[in-house]
Length: 239
View 1: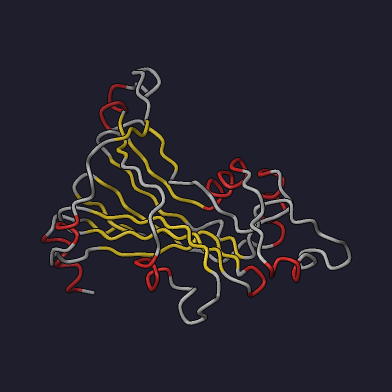
View 2 (view 1 turned 60 degrees about the vertical axis):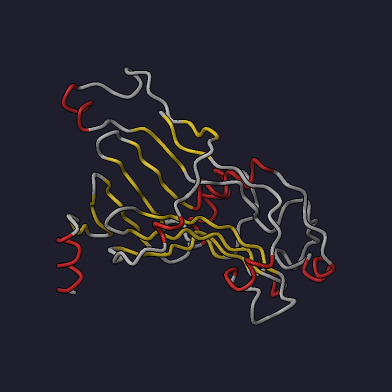
């Protein structure tokens, strides 16, 4: 612990209760147990659905705030499931589906007319909060006509920088939700963060695996190189 504190201090970082502050960024994460029945019912009403993943870590989150600009990037299960609901993808047709049509309500026939894999286009929740300067001047982003938007670009992630031997000042992996699809596969949404003295790297990944290889389907890292890229886009956050 003392060694970690010394490394963080030498990099100009300040440890926070759930993360750290470095180079004008506050980076924090928090992990909690899955939602209990009462909270699940509230989520179902708000999202307007009778279906949620088996394990929803509703109070778990990852948060990044750029203090100078007020840019806040937040990752949470609720917004991700809102994205799933709005996407309204058709159900995936798999042979096993017929075997677990009754899993939600054994006393009633359940029609799988929704995407039970919970596939989401969610890429994070970004907002523009008052920056330090705006607070001092008592103005808000609305008054300055500042808005956040993602725009396509040619820039790519600097993989060389990621492969450097810089010390990792902070690392965490937060599971947002998971469903084992009645032992017929897995749907998993996770977000990982790695903070180094010169940069931070974040990976939000939705994974849908099928247990053709029971030793590998639960670990996307084991088969990621075998998958063909069907769509790729580079974007940057602008305001």
